[in-house]
Image 1 (cartoon, helix red, strand yellow):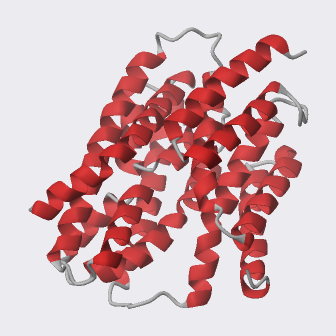
Image 2 (cartoon, rainbow over the protein chains, first blue to last red; image 1 turned 180 degrees about the horizontal axis):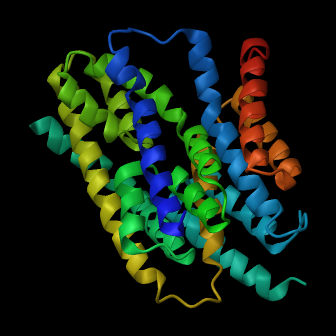
Image 3 (cartoon, chains in turn red, cyan; image 1 turned 90 degrees about the vertical axis):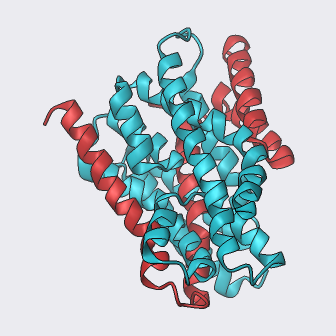
Length: 108
Length: 226
């Protein structure tokens, strides 16, 4: 399959799957007054687990090697502090990008 | 209709955060060689920023279709949680509106609508119009910034590590999702397993990290007694 074919297959398939997820309760179980508490507990874990699983390798293992103290990891720590304090995406990206550029310049 | 306007106004400050997210999404797409049609296709059809970024990343790495789709699904499973919380507020709406609402569902549209409903539980159609005000404004902003991001992507200097913007976006989404000990356990586990499992094929590290993270977090939620 060509690259474009792969891209569009992904787009359509993940689009359909995501719509199914979004519609799950809204379209099928909309008269449920409450979600069973155990299911609600499990669902609540998904954003934290999935997002952390995306962030950590990109920051700690950007290339072939594990670099816990590299420019990206340290810049990410700074960005984490900003994100925690300000809850502001723009500030987090801006500070993170500036910091990583500086660290890549000046760290060995 | 006042509820629609109130929704559009309520989301305005949030848009300051959504706009750079959309720009990064458009930029990331050009980084791996996607054209405007494909990048916009992602934003319109998938319409889910975090998963769009992950999809673009994996497309660039040449991963197989099923791996990419599975990754997108795992990242977007949180929408099930939002769907569940939103459903009672929209349960009396006709199916066409609920379907449109489902398509437009985002973290922010969910959060703002549910928060407002706490103060006004019997708003009836008001919930729907407020939600639509938030969600449609976000949708327009998202598509617009994606287009700008794609257009700008080809003009920025290569010395700026644009790729780092992607984990930064994820990081700023991650922080608010960790609010108690179980979610902290979920996040730490996900981070640890995904990092250790970096070498696993088929994006297995990330998927395993998400799975074990949910597992550990769930167990903690039943036992940790925060």
